Length: 166
Image (cartoon, rainbow, N blue to C red; front, side, top):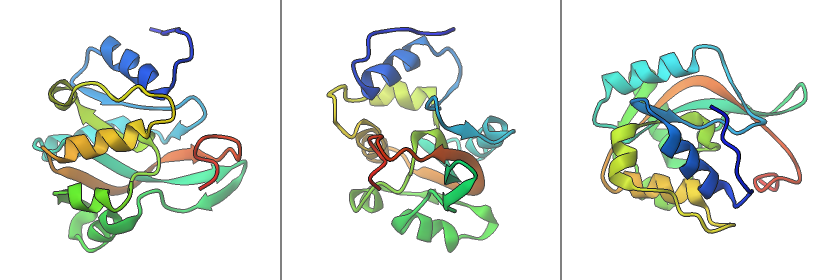
């Protein structure tokens, strides 16, 4: 179903979407970004192989028009851990690495079990707050993260967007 509401920020919008969800997993997709075919099926497969995980995050690219600006969205210490892992996936404690910086480029990379959302509670709703990053940190306090190498997300660059200055 299409949800319409007054624009009160990303955290409010995501919480409203989550409240309307009825499935076992929640995945986010901003209106201008893209998922590759099979993204959800692949992430559910990874999630089922790692049922203890609080967040399952794939890789992707950042693009503008026909140009790839960043060939990889996972970065920092968590990306290093993934790179050092055989088999295309890494699962483990992500909290300390996340404290050093948000390793996930866009929420579209993530799949979160509904049970984890229920135990974590809603995202912060203050405008301007780093609601996604705050959420990853809160989940990482209780649960391991699982990252996989599949590039399944295309994050569209906008120089005027909140993340455009990166």
